[in-house]
Image (spheres, rainbow, N blue to C red):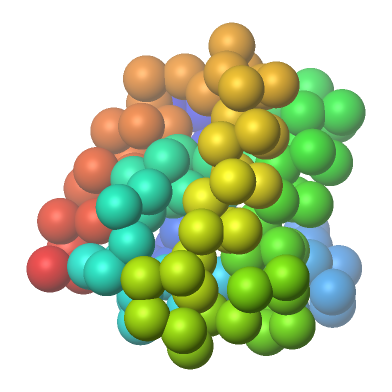
Length: 120
């Protein structure tokens, strides 16, 4: 694979403080909700693509925006609402993935499947 990993995901060695904060917050929330959201595999694949060194910068920026929306506690529909809570997150992610689908490679999807299996 083209990207480095830590136990939590791709390595944050060169990350900025906000970058590593996003990574930390992402993994906390992903671990907590991964078994409850039907789009968890796509979310994790997007994460791995966003932090892949080979991913073009515009694609990274687009994916990081969608990931940040997922992580932020204040969004259009609060995540604490049963059933509806993640619909806005899913819509943002689906739209983003449609825009950057060609950049998400099989190795991103495989890494996502492995991590999701580890959460269960």
